[in-house]
Image 1 (cartoon, rainbow, N blue to C red):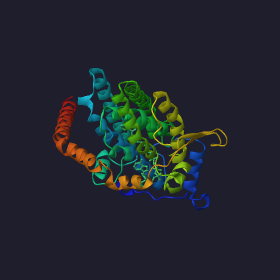
Image 2 (cartoon, protein in one colour):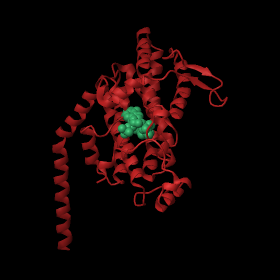
Image 3 (cartoon, rainbow, N blue to C red):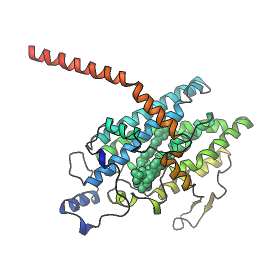
Length: 337
Ligand code: BYC
């Protein structure tokens, strides 16, 4: 029923003097650090922003299975195959927790999926890039899951209870995913010269798309100001991007790989003298083109999802028929007692 509100207004915060008394009381609860629960009153825009963000997050987990799933049959050892299989399965679980959290806001999973398939909802830009070889699977775990955790650890403190709670388990699993990716990178970087070249190439190609995962620069971010006022977001896009860069550069150095951007240099004056790495901006024109559907894999990803949905119709029908039969049998037994 709230599906029409998924596209939310952007830029700026509603000033307190323009809030209704109910909105002011809601903001006071947020400011006091209270969690908002599904049956609590909430402004329509708060609900719509959550549906957009949690729905997009859920879709990302599901679409995100595709680039890695593609490598399960080609993993180099049985152990790596089993680990990758478990990881990809975890991502399905994350999607399901997130769809469930989103459903508490009054939108059904079927509606969310229909909007994804109709191009009315997004999923993370990163999954529109291909995974060309085994080193890419290492780089996805290390960089993509690494960027995801950087964002999601903060989201454990988000103001909406079901979303915050879903994040706790997701974060635990994502940190395992990040380590499995780094373990692949360690093997490749310390392997033959050809393997090391593959690791370097994967890092070079996935570095900037990983930085894009945090969203556009703060000055261009439509939703950050209001989402932070509502504690839907705890940090800005640029803050998390900087933290990710600062965490990852020492790992690049540890692997003995070259930094993928010549501007990645320690700047002691950054962050009020605490220091941080300078870095080049990703190509934001490319980012917006990917969001519009013009990335290297957008068409393939959507086709894979729509095909899976259509070809899985018989499973959904079978499960529904089974559930209906069980319910009818149980009603008969109750009536007979
Ligand atoms: N990709 O105002 P902004 C994973 C859109 S999956 C696509 O800054 P916001 C994994 C944004 O929606 C982890 N779209 O937005 C899974 C908005 O569009 P509209 C995924 C993006 O929401 C499998 C517009 O740009 N994590 O870990 O305040 C295997 C303006 O942006 C992106 C999450 O989803 C993007 N990268 O902030 C492996 C985290 N960035 O609707 C790993 C939850 C921006 O106005 N989400 N847009 O047309 C968030 O934290 C926030 O939604 C974002 C963006 C930081 C991503």
